[in-house]
Length: 387
Picture 1: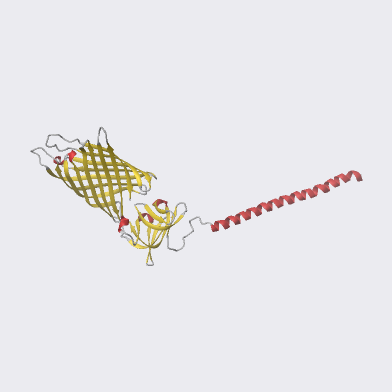
Picture 2: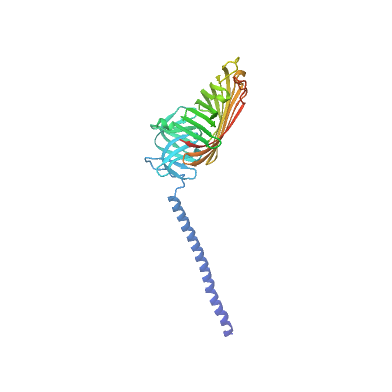
């Protein structure tokens, strides 16, 4: 009996420490895992306290303007302008940047800026913009407005030259040999913008000579002055057009009107406006039959639309249509259509492809009894420069 019980006692004595050891290992593992979790949590909190997500971080007061993108990135530099949902910002390292206003979350100025609020006059002060509001500090008096009412921002001390921009597109074609051809096309525009007004000047000229004989020589100059009311409507006190095309039997033509316009779309990528005007049209024909007058004056009613959109970051599309309704002796109806596809090349240079369609509803007969064609079409490919 004594010897038969000894193995059982010995086995029991061995198993018990093993069980205790296993329990100790389990407890130790749990404690280790818990300790790792605590260390990880503390580390995460410490790192998070040092790394700003862009929401709580505010730049220090210094000699720079600051902007924050919706990607939480911060840039310091100088704000050049904000107009028509495009912000121009200059950085010492990145140079001059043009950014979509919808990509800007926060802005803070270090000096005085002039702002235009829709429906109000311009004001100047130290500016701060967040996702919802615009705050302007005018000598300690804080003025606050909803962000969507902000129209434009410019430095309080700015140059007149900063209000201007333009572009020019030149197309040429030379051919020598059996046929000698010389062709020039020039499309140029100049625009002055302020928060309250806009002045546009546009020129389109074509000259084509084949075997020493002119086959095209026309010139069109358009100009308008717009005044903004703070809403989508704007007043166009002056709208004018000068046109010359001897091959259309038009020696000189001038149209002078006043009218109104409405912005259908106005965001960072697309602008679409429609206009209407009423005025007078004066035309002098290149030649007429003996019993026909060479000068005509007519009331003029015009309708127009201008559409521009950014198809991609490197390609823009533009469509312009201007229609003028006249009396029978002045041609009855005229329109000018221009559509352009502009592709960025390098820097401020781009390649433009334009289709132009001019139409006169009732062309005036020439002295020899011939009648010009109603429609003129031109395809223009040229090198453009934006400035």
